[in-house]
Length: 164
Image 1 (tube, rainbow, N blue to C red):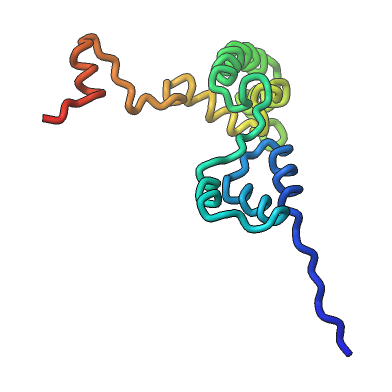
Image 2 (image 1 turned 60 degrees about the vertical axis):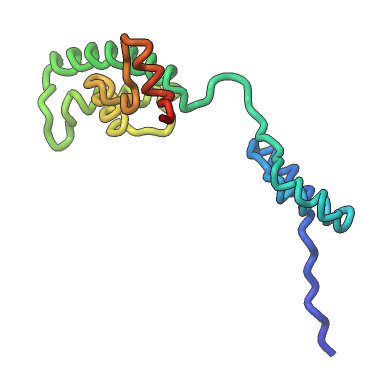
């Protein structure tokens, strides 16, 4: 005699609690499935309302980690510190690069990546160098779609074209 395979059904309400606790949003369809798992089938008219709703993600206080303002101020600080470190590393004896001695620029970026890891999280010295270079040359923020117009009426017409 063989024992039939038993599988416990996932508790969808607990899944939703965990998802919300992790700061992610929950869709209306998942909410509907969890309610129907606990209560049973809902009337069709009520079922059709659920996909339009969702439980919003829990937002943490403060600015998000990928805030451009924090990065911009960090890059401004990095710029001054980088120039000072570069001068210091170039002026030291034995500043020439070699197999065991990286170039002064690399040493400066490595040190800054280590010192400023609270501002620039999760990036190495190469990524920091590229980000700093893009910031200095004005390629850091995309200006696509940004049009500064002195003519107010033309700007209104551009943003809200009339359907003639």
